[in-house]
Picture 1 (cartoon, rainbow, N blue to C red):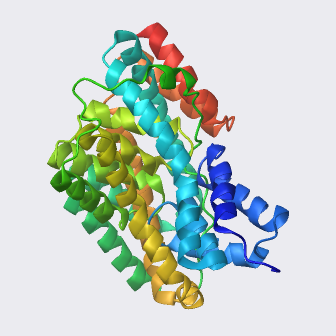
Picture 2 (spheres, one colour):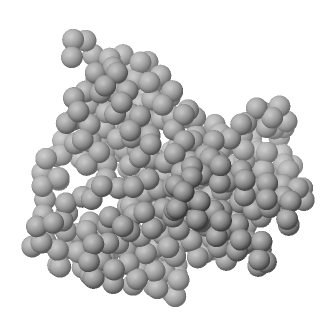
Picture 3 (cartoon, rainbow, N blue to C red):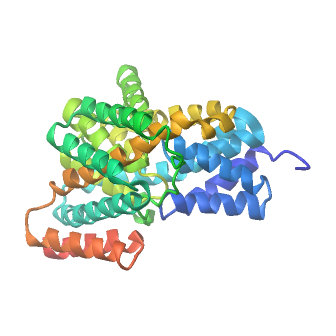
Length: 391
C-alpha cells in the first residue's frame, strides 16, 4: 500500500456501501470485499477472509464488525471509528425517520392495516433465516438436540435469564462434546434474511414533532440507562441479529415496559425495510423512550461493545481462530441460537391477527423466500399492501 487511506475516504466508502446494503449482512460483506479488495485494493483478499472469520466468532452484527476490522487495519482506532460511523449512519437515519412517521400516524387505520400485513411476512422472514442457518450449523444429532432444547426452553420458560442460561449451557455442551472433534471450524453463514429498502422522501416532508413522543427531551439518567441496557445485550448477540428479537423483547417489553408488544413487532418490521443490520431497531425503542438522544444512546449501546471487542481481538486473531476450545464452544452455541430464532418466529407470529389472511400471507411469503428465493424487498411491501386490502 503506497499511502495510507484518508479517514474521510474510509467514511465515504462505507457510507456509500451502507446506503445500498439491502439484502442482509452477507450482501454487505460481499460489497465490502468487492470495494476494499477488488476495486480500491486497500487490503489483500486473505486479510478480508481473516476479518470475516473473526467477525463470525464475536458477538454483534457480522457486517459492522467486519467494517470495524477493515477500518482498524487501515488506520487504527480512528479508522475503526469513522468506518463504523459511515456504516451505521444510513440505517440509523432511515429508522429514525420511519419511527417518527410511525408514532405520528401509527394509529391511523390504514397504517395499522399495513402493519397487520407486515407481521406474518416478518415471521416468514425469521423462519426462512433460521432454516437457512440450520442447514449449515446443524450437522448432527447433538446439534439438533441443542437446537430443540433451546427452542423449548425459550418458549416454555422464557425470560432474560433463560436466554443467558441457554447460551451458557450450549457453550458448555459444545466445549465438552466437540473440543476433541476435528470438524469444529466456523461454518459458512447464510444471509439472515433479505433487507428491503424504503423510500423516505414522503416521510421527510411530513415528519413534524410528535405528540406523546419526547422527541427532543433530555433525561441523563434515562439515556444512561438505555445505553447500559443495550450495551449489556449487545455482548450476548451471537449468531446474527435475529437472536436479538427474543432477548430484547423480554427486556424492553416484559421488564422495562418501554414499548408495547405491538410496537416491538412493528419495530422489527421497520428494521426489515431499512438498510443495514436488524439491530438498528434499537433506535426505534430509544426514540420512543427518550427522544432523539435516546435513539442515539440505544444505537451506540448496541454497536459499541462488539466493535471494541473486534478491535481488541484483532491483535490475537490467529490464536482465536485456531483455539479448539473456542471453536468447540461456539459449535454448541450456534444450534442453540438457531433454536432461539425459531422461537422468536413463534413469539412474533403470535401477535398476528388470528384470521386466515395472516396464515395465507405467512405461507405465501415463506414459499416465496424458500422456494423462489425472492428478495424481501418485494415481500414486505407486498404483504403490507395485501394487509391494507384484506384487514
